[in-house]
Length: 422
Ligand SMILES: Nc1ncnc2c1ncn2[C@@H]1O[C@H](COP(=O)(O)OP(=O)(O)OP(=O)(O)O)[C@@H](O)[C@H]1O
Image (cartoon, rainbow, N blue to C red; front, side, top):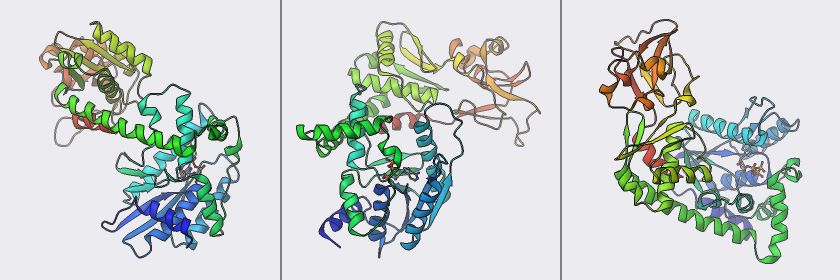
């Protein structure tokens, strides 16, 4: 092994410290970076308690994709690594293709890992990817969170995504592949200047003479990552004493919120809106600034499918009725991604044809005892209830219909913990 490849092996191995026997997942596209990762990891696990399992997602978008996936399969086999191909067939021909393909890929990877009991999945992102992302985010005037770029480890549901090459240059991996006589595939879209990432890559070449090197930019992203983690920690620690869950609402002490540093207040409010709405993304910075201003001046507002309302003591964030007005599902399914309703009785039998919907004014008008639960009227409109056609059968939060029980899927701990991760 040459000096440079033993250094590379050491860098990658540093991300998988010795521990109990474990199978590590590897997402390999067929591109040079993740293929190099496959070779390096195969070297690292030799004689250790670690084993590997590789996967390629075929998005079915390019005719060559199936052959590329088969090529990865051949390499994996030659290294004694089991390999599978997962196919994505979800493209409807509308919206942002790259974004949808990426989301689908992570979803497929997550279910694949869970099905194999894999807890860590390694990805081939490099320092170049990090610098490109930084530049793209800079053009959107991102804050600390956006500019921190990708983290070397990130927990997503029950798996941890590991990026052992985040400090390694792409050119270094190409040299390594050439040294060992390996082949890889260059995706033609990597040259397509219609993509912002490709334009960022070209701009980085132009910036290099100014000293704005990939190394320097990815180091800046790393430094900001450490600031992001610190801010997340402060937001987490403040939120423990300030925020509580009341049924499905988040209630924040107004007095405590008022004296928070603006950045910490922004993080807590942003996370509250994500937690209630179930959205993958935070609200836009500008919208969030308006909401913070509305809270400061004592008025509420609607944002991100949530209602922010104020009382003398509290800021209450609840689901906005209009965001869930048309939502219905069978009683056994989660409603709005955040509620499970359990029917009365041990057998849990449910009348045929009934469904879960938002309570709304029509439902609430039938609930004489709605005040007993202590939730404000406007919040209650967006709570789940059980209907048979136009007939309200149960509204557990409004004291209507016996025996039905509502359970929150994302609990209070999940709210606080998410502040650490974002
Ligand atoms: N189709 C895919 N199947 C499996 N893993 C993938 C796929 N596409 C991307 N990945 C994973 O995500 C990482 C980053 O994706 P990106 O789109 O930057 O990679 P790429 O340019 O397609 O390939 P590479 O990073 O391997 O050169 C890859 O290194 C790989 O680990």
